[in-house]
Length: 71
Image (cartoon, rainbow, N blue to C red):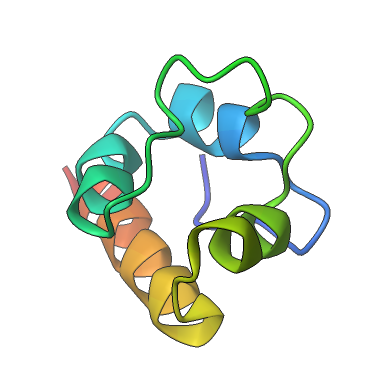
């Protein structure tokens, strides 16, 4: 799977598509794993809701996805 997600991609889709992103999400202090809202929250929604820098979150998620895809 290529390292692609956009503003409409849900947190659930990201975690399911690239399990390596779960560590990044937890490192940002986000509790999206197992959250009933994760299938509805986009990355932007979740960043805003948790007070996380959206640009940094996007960067870190993409890096985790690229590392996973390289393996």
